[in-house]
Image (cartoon, rainbow, N blue to C red; front, side, top):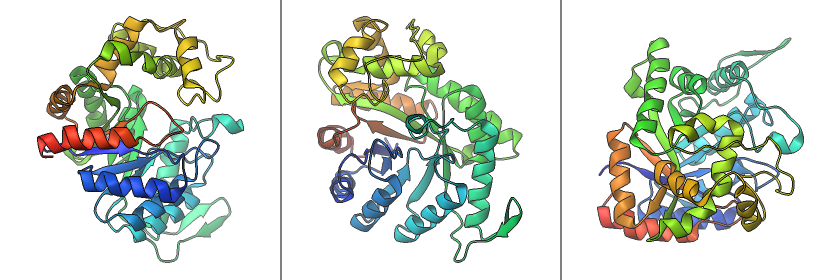
Length: 339
């Protein structure tokens, strides 16, 4: 098994604490750490990435994901250059439409055209090109070209966009072989349309994970994740997995949203209205890496065969660091398989 495994570290603690855990992940054999960017939920993703860069030597570092709404593309380019210099050849700029960054401050997620334009500006600025900003033309001093741009996507249009304009696609549609293959096909179609070799676009699969010998017991904690996906236009993917869930756009009493709920136990109870225990188990099996270490390793083999070039895992929760997941996967999955 050569599939690189990364882990998502929410900046929910001081940057120095996150950096220490990233160093531990590096020591255990993880290939990459990804940092989500939501200014109302966590510490700054880019500043934390810089701290991680200073505390690590070989592990890749990425945002998963930032956006071009709360951050102007020129600002993203400046931050990318700074971290790229601190971690030469180790930084990946992950971008998405905004969601948990834009919603809490009343802004709108970026449309496809805005995301496309933002990526173009970021790349041009980093390359040292002169860029027009309305009536003003500017260029970056000390540019830093070549940083890979990753695009998070789940729907068909954005998956094709990722293949067209990005160096990699972060897939949000589960770890089943059929889901990965279907998403990969859309990414490759976008790459071909842009005249790119499909194999040049990385396929990065994101999945919640937990080492457990009792999925039926532990899958319940996934109910808010499952409901949140259905709420944000993922009903088709849910239905393909045999899960029927019609979740209202607003769920009172859960702050700030289902996926990032502060009171997780309450969110689990609330989401029981739409997601049954059986649905949660099905979600764990189709979309997540829940199971014993050998079961997770076997599923990773299948994900690789379906065309993934890497996987990054995340724990269920937003406001605690995934120390247990780092240790368990590092020792029982990465260590056992010799990745």
